Image 1 (cartoon, rainbow, N blue to C red):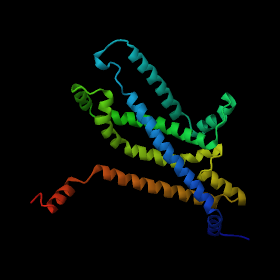
Image 2: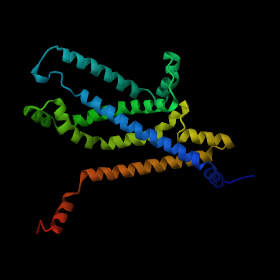
Image 3: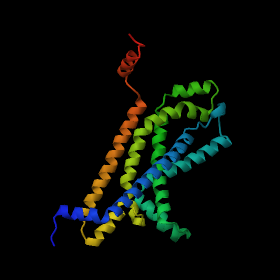
Image 4: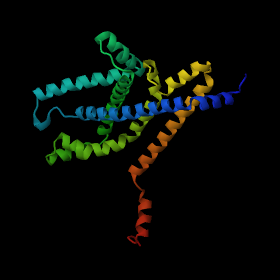
Length: 254
């Protein structure tokens, strides 16, 4: 029986909507976990890499400065390697490579979470470092002048401002993770791409099931981008004009 494209699409949705839904849920879960955990890693690395080596007025080579140089070198290697290699290669190395090289057996889902988290953390580390660097250095100097150490300066002055600046980039990382999680099908993670590939093999029809998958990815990214914009507007607060109008209504301005 010859079916039109739309008839095939309706057929796939009616018969395999549970598989599409399950794959979508896995995709969203991986993106959420990877972005949150990667943000935490990036935040820690970003703060560590901004620690001054000559705190307290000490100059020259000290155990503290040597330790910081070693830690910064390790973190620099981590960010360069993870940002310089494809996620699909990292997934193969962690899932299959660890079994061959170190005899470490790891299930597909934990391996996927590790891959997407480490990959996101590397990108977020540079984003956070850039956000911290964008803050006026005079604020940091003023905080130190009143006796605040590096950690207190970061916590109370720099990070609240830096996090606001990096929210758009963090949202973009989440959207990227929604799409790039599809490469994790190579380690048999049942996300949306893998589920669609399994559905395709049942009828040897490629166009229709992957057209459905493309529509789902588009909806996910569209909703995520709109929610991100709403969050940015919320954090920006009302404009001056809006504040004036609101105060007039309350009788504060005549």
